Length: 129
Image 1 (cartoon, one colour):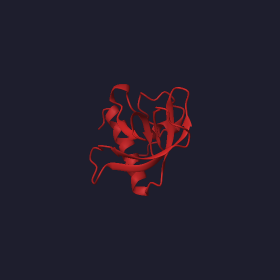
Image 2 (cartoon, rainbow, N blue to C red):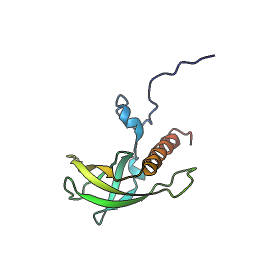
Image 3 (cartoon, rainbow, N blue to C red):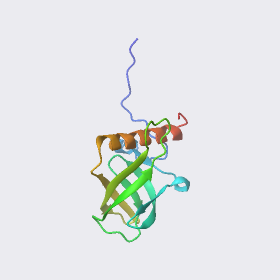
């Protein structure tokens, strides 16, 4: 028997723009569980992550600022070292004090690790992981 797949993305409930299919490849952290990282010597909260980049709180940064970051992604069922070390460059400063940035100079393996992390976190939120 053949089953037809529906072409709707499966997204976590905490994403508001379900029409925006990009949102399904981004993980938005719940307010109480936001990780932190060091950026240009300051500790900042991370709002969301995707293989393209991260959004984090603005503590006086400027557009195009760049810094090397290190994140322990703590990926369930992951073989290898789940630490991401990448350069992050700010592309946009939102009015709500959020920096939108991209990862630069990442290897294919690092991008795949971020994809795996996003998938596992979404599965966890849906109660499947």
